[in-house]
Length: 394
Image: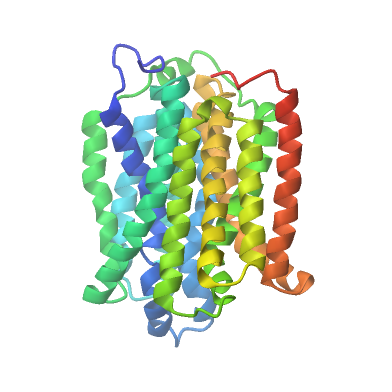
């Protein structure tokens, strides 16, 4: 049954709808990846376009990192459903606006507003899974959410490419209007968790001291996760392969690896916490080491996928770890803090790698540095898990 949801009980249809909403932030970036070269050519005459066009692509991720805690706090104060509904409406309208805009700064501004909406969508949809379900059911749906988001990225890249081919560089922006029918479904199907109604009567502070270590680990996990995703092209090129089709196939494999890892978490969710952290980091370390050292397209791709399997275990593990430590009335704020930490790691990943490559002597050496850090983290987590009395309380 649902977690304190009053007379209404959440079912699979509610969870599936929330998972659909969680796909929106992923769509916000990946659907534009195939048309990035077209946009670069279109705005080539604009000063600093080589920087500004990629910024237009990725600025929503920065907005998610910065504003997810605010969005979570708003949902604690004003209710989950109103915040989610408003965010979906903004996403559908503002997300499609660049289809009509001709000015690059205006497009960047629209993308920043889109990022604010994505921060609310990602945070509130995840918090509502925590509100609607308890214990193993909650973690099963968190696992399904992570797997669905990763698998959707493969399909969304293909759809973005098809829209770009048919309608030009602005075609993929039209896909954002799919948020509007999803908003109608949210208005019709979802119900407000009872915790929101009681929040005004009792102030609950976010237990930051309790969850801060998990948030810091989440930032590191975000860096490890996104580095392999962003660098998959240069990593594959180490084998001598430069074909965009083969690199795209490897990139699809990494997203599939994240989905597989998320599914594996669902099978071993009873061990969420330090033990699955150790397992995920060990797989990441092995995958990174292989991606840096082994020869050939197939083995390098397999190692990159293995690293992403580890990431797929780590992401729902960290989220479940936070969820189990949050009081219901602060679940929005806590989920927002976790979402912000994860996306901060994602945003920082390419910057950190760019800074490290000249220091370490190359991408392979940087991957080996990450290998050592992940392995050290796995050993520390294994030691912490061996001292823990058992699985985390639900």
